[in-house]
Amino acid sequence: MPDRAPQPVDRQLPTDEARDLISLVRDIAQREIAPKAAEEEDAGRFPREVFTLLSEAGLLGLPYDGEYGGGDQPYEVYLQVLEELAAARLTVGLGVSVHSLACHALATYGTKEQRAEHLPGMLGGGLLGAYCLSEPSSGSDAASLRTKAVRDGGDPARPDGAGSGGGSWVLSGTKAWITHGGIADFCTVLARTGGEGPRGITAFLVPGDAEGLSAAAPERKMGMKGSPTAQVHFDGVRIPDDRRVGEEGQGFAIALSALDSGRLGIAACAVGVAQAALDEAVAYATGRKQFGRPIADFQGLRFMLADMATRIEAGRSLYLTAARLRDAGRPFARQAAMAKLFCTDAAMQVTVDAVQVLGGYGYTADFPVERYMREAKVLQIVEGTNQIQRMVIARHLAGPESR
Image 1 (tube, rainbow, N blue to C red):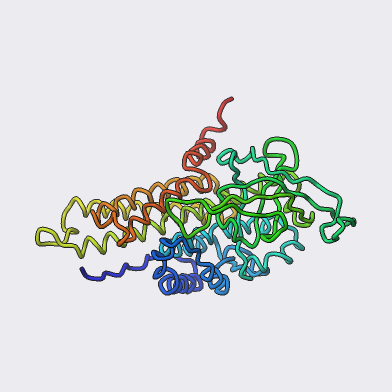
Image 2 (tube, rainbow, N blue to C red):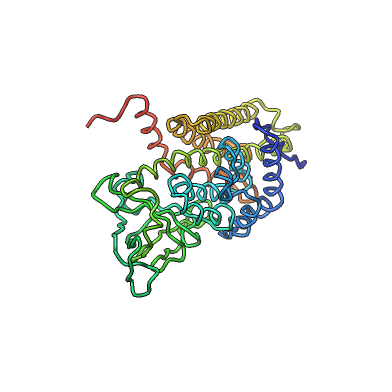
């Protein structure tokens, strides 16, 4: 069977700098990420050294302010970087997306002093973040979270807990389904500081090595075995008030703002996985012969490949449209929900079809399409299930549901 290398995606990029950036990402993906992906996923190994390399290359802070170590790149470019990384290995692409999500609160709502102190390490200093919103009993209903932050007058910088200054907070509770749980250097944590509902939630930036912070054993997952997903426990974790992000009670609004952008990251990752699956299917179909000719000559299979490619192009266009709205400062929440919904559903269908194209070989671990299919499934669930995305879209069209 001939070795048919996939053709690079013909991207519409706004600048020469962006084109050079994509070339750099493709080079890193082909040299450092893709060759080890299957082996490391099978072994459940997280590639921390890859994230260190990406940080050194300036790729962990692309959509953020260059003053603090970011890349000053528009979302239109950043998302296409994610797509390239996810095509090489979803653990890496999704990991970069989650890290960006964890940086969002401080980068967008933090004070100038907070950003100057913390963002350089987060964006380009080799640190890796986690985003702690979901809990065992509050997944889709995130506003019902129970992790508490109680204000305390003591100063955590003093060993006796005395002092004045801004005081501190004590966090207690458990977060669930946390990507990078147990290995993150910092966590953006949403905790209840007031009454029930969304208005009683506040955001905090918590060091990954804070006393009282621990993680459970990673979940045993269908796919993305190299990306640790774990419960994170806060057992009286004391942090200073200057690590509170935004105003008290503003946390849920901050979380929703982050998720609007994060959903675009998931959409881009989904398109990357789907593109990788299509590339593999085309290579196989043009090389595999049955009845004396390549199976790509048969109309039924050709039509399947055409539908796969069309879904991918449509998904890419949808997430880029939402990104360009975001870059222009226009509302994009509805389009972000649409992109997350469509792209992840498309990735699921494309990867299922890729397995079918390869037949029995597609069902074996000797070819990567079975891994792509297992990985695509989680993208329909994370950062708001696709059922939640439909609710978000419907609210924009018809208003809130009647009670």
